[in-house]
Image 1 (cartoon, each protein chain N blue to C red):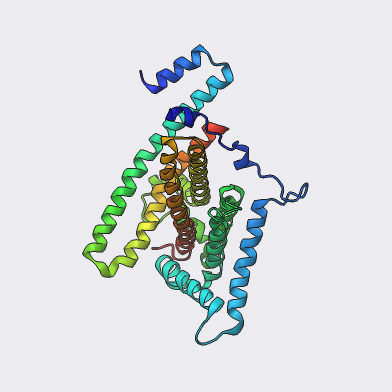
Image 2: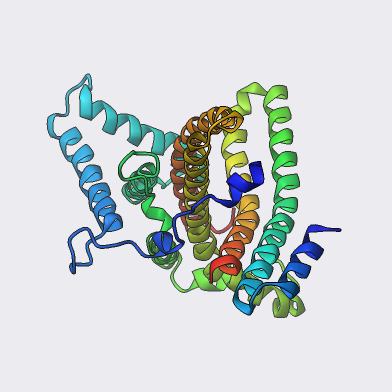
Length: 93
Length: 256
């Protein structure tokens, strides 16, 4: 039985409405953050990998590549961070 | 057994993250206000004391001030704005130091709270940056700045229906929003991570037997993450400043 099924069963069986809502909020929040982390994870991995390759091929351009890499990471990371904010909102709001 | 311990963990209530008690009762002056005040005073002192002597061979505070100005000039302005960027060094240096001091209190014991994990701080700086780069654009290009920003040249006329709303959203709404959310979420995530491992370490050390041995690893993680958060504090200040520089550069030379 999957975790969410167990949680759903627990929610219907013994728990009152408030804690059932809490459990489902926690499960949804975890799922939301997990989904939000996939894309940026792939993106940052690809970005840094390509940057390392660029620096290795042309060490004299390392400074420029590093700055651009941080910029790219900042933009890519924003999606994961919005996912994290959604997690906080779902869990606690 | 492990799940019993984990289930018994007592996390500080979430109110501690969103409501901070007053340091002096009834004044509204809390830890965040103290950190902000410290950041302002420390930044001013670094540059006031650094600029006092103007020695040819810098020492002490002057060395710190000159090294940081050099870093902001070479690492941020030259890369992101290009020529004509030196005029914006004071703003970027202020932003960099204010963000950095707000972040670094995350790992300073006793205080252990990043000021930028409260949305008011990053949101204000995001809006300030929006006002700043729009003013730079208006000052250098007049109202043509809005025309260039909203109707980029070289696009077929019919596509403006699609391009203009997207450009408006991405330039004037998403930029300050993403600046603020990036800083806020990074610092809050780091803070929660440190809290989690601190609570876990305490809980594991209080148990007797095998689990307190696992506590050593948890403590190691806590130490490692503290170092990681030191890096994150610096990196977020750098990223905030360089993104502000990129936006200012975009307003200054819209053609590239």
